[in-house]
Amino acid sequence: MRVALFATCLADTVYPEAAKATVRLLERLGHEVVFPPEQTCCAQMHVNTGYQREAVPLVRRYTRTFAEAEVVVAPSGSCVGSIRHQHAIVAAAAGDTALADAAASVAARTYELSEFLIDVLGLEDVGAYYPHRVTYHPTCHSLRMLRVGDRPLRLLRQVRGLELVELPAAEQCCGFGGTFAIKNAATSTAMLADKMRHVLSTGADVCTAGDTSCLMQIGGGLSRLRTAVRTVHLAEILAATA
Image (cartoon, rainbow, N blue to C red; front, top):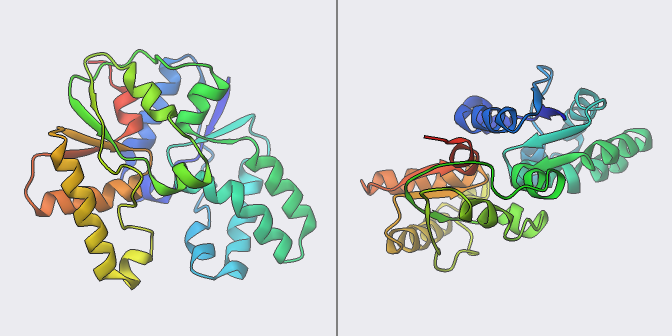
């Protein structure tokens, strides 16, 4: 299968290993991965902060860039959630029905990584090896918008050498929420403190998730506490073989 990679802004600028790992994994599974260089932001930041008019050009660019793709895969439940649930609405609100229809078509072919592996490829064991004690944080958008459910956990359970430990109060938000962490810093910090306490209680070496945004929030807090716990994107674990 020919898969188009949507790297996302955070992976492109801050966490490139998540995107690189997605490519390694899919190529190891026998698929051709292409990276359309015209891609930019999914417009989630604009829409979520009330700038819907400014989001329209980004929706148009995403739709045009991936119009011919058989499938699009992104290592981000948050961005895929935006594409699926916001793009057509934003275009329709701007009065561009043609764009709304095209955006809906591309969105239907856009998948978060764990969705693609399980729902499209029918895989749970991807041949990964990762000898660490790992806990999983289900990010808000993947959990509540995409409803990926236990797909990431099913994939992690098949990773050789990995000891998966349950995260207490896993469904609670980490406090990032994009600009929420800036506009409501005190509340965000309190939520992060709860999340870090739960992560540390597991005794895990690694906290993983399907969104680099949440890993940035959790990882930043853990590093400031000088803990030994690392944050690693799900794609990096699934791509590891040694």
